[in-house]
Image (cartoon, rainbow, N blue to C red; front, side):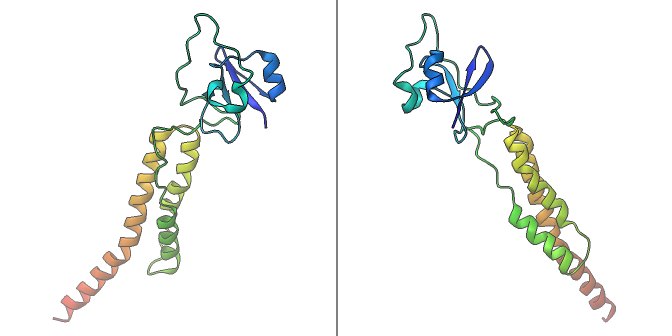
Length: 164
């Protein structure tokens, strides 16, 4: 598994451990590899700390990088924002009910589309958009599940009033 490093705002890699030793990384060098939640300093990785050089004179530790792109083109998850509930289960139930239930208007599909886009937006670092998609998935799912009760309630109310 290769490590990627940030130097002067540029991303390089992947490197194996031997290549990193030759590069002369310092304890403040930012590194990332597949499986890590975010970029971090070498001093936080036990297998790299042993051969990392002390910081260069005048070098300050870099700030935490929350929105840096990974080598695969996606922003890494933000540690200060929890992943929103995508309401996939609600959307799937609503979709099934709309197709096989009391009416055939596929409103559940709208909820399903929103819920399926939550993860995509989250991985791209569009956290606010992901949260908005999750909110819309919930609203559309609930409205879709409530619609048969409104339709049938109205239907039975009209029939009851006509027979009085």
